[in-house]
Amino acid sequence: MARQYFGTDGIRGTVGQAPITADFMLRLGWAAGRVFARQNRRARVLIGKDTRISGYMFESALEAGFSAAGVDVALLGPMPTPGIAYLTSTLRASAGVVISASHNPYQDNGIKFFSQHGTKLPDALEDEIERELEGLQETVGPDRLGKAVRIEDAAGRYIEFCKSTVPNRFGLHGLKIVIDCANGATYHIAPNVFRELGAEVITLGVTPDGLNINQQVGSTHPEVMREKVLETGADLGIAFDGDGDRVIMVDHSGRIVDGDDILYIIARDRHRRGVLGGGVVGTLMSNFGLASAFEELGIPFERARVGDRYVIERMQARDWHLGGESSGHILCGHAQTTGDGIVSALQVLATMVIEERSLDELLEGMEKAPQALINVRLVPGIDKTALMESAPVAGAVRDVEKTLGESGRVLLRPSGTEPLIRVMVEGRPRFDVQALAQKIADEIEQGMTSAQG
Image: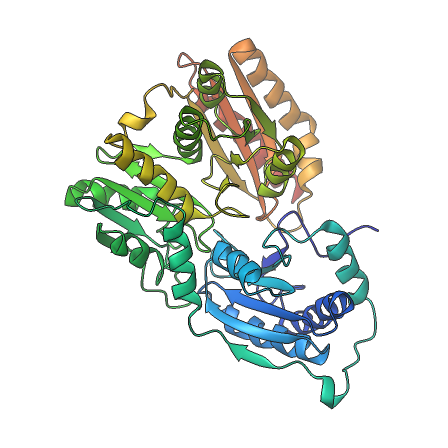
């Protein structure tokens, strides 16, 4: 069955435009409730959200839909996506529901589900939910309606979990850290985690108003964190995205430490201690320098398609426990069931403290190839695939590939979560990769102009 709603990362779109509407969320709650109720006669789901203003509307609609299907609901309030995954498992819920559009602006929102184990919902269950959405909605009898409660200590439970992922005697005393929460779901959690571990914390992006999530702050705008680190003389900075599953760091000198760097630090430490458990999964976007560094260390490395779903699939297929994306989505399978920005940052900090080395020193041996990434925003109605395969765009890609030869690569792909085409060019230092990427991006822009007539 061709999917109508679920993409690679749940259901996502612009608020008020189908399917991101209140009436659809009511039906989605009912349809998902029907599926979960077939597995467990007295099913219970957890619902958490980030700080978007539309989250209130969709939380209520989903709650009503689940209740109509006879499913109990536990409301978590604002909670990072990985926190919802963790609580779904520990509270023995049938499933977890996340209301978030991750790193997207507040105008967008979305829904994704976690299984009872805190992992991505299997494709088969998502397909079942899609089939139920086509049916006639019927409410169970009044005596079977689902009940709703609020979990008041959800934040505290997750804070304690995050701290449990590092050694008991581990502390951050003497470290000054800038924490940027993107005005998102980590705003009331991340600062407390690092403070309780002993760090002096300087905060950014901790005043959400429903409209400012990811707005010039967070992991998609690390330059703000960088400026604060340099201004305050902090030892490092840590920035999360709106739902807390991604992390980008910066060292004391202002050097941006992205997902590839973080993956290298964690993998190198676990390999050194003999607890890596196989190799590491990256993506097609992972820097060539990361692959070279792993080769030097004797760490097996594989690339998956872009998207945490595909990284997890390869990790499971190889029975490996570590993977991630350059965007900062790190999967520490030894500690969490999904990408977790706070947990990933703690793994890096634990290595810093135990080895008594600064963040920049932990990156010795990691020499990244110059890489340029340009996101071309699409106008409504443009066919991404047709545009990327058009003769002018394909010709520009061939020209750049010919210029790079064996000393670089080009990756052109549509975003699975936003109306974007991503252009990535990577090459040896002698190439102006930014100019080469811009050449392809210009052809895409020109193609859109032509398509609009």
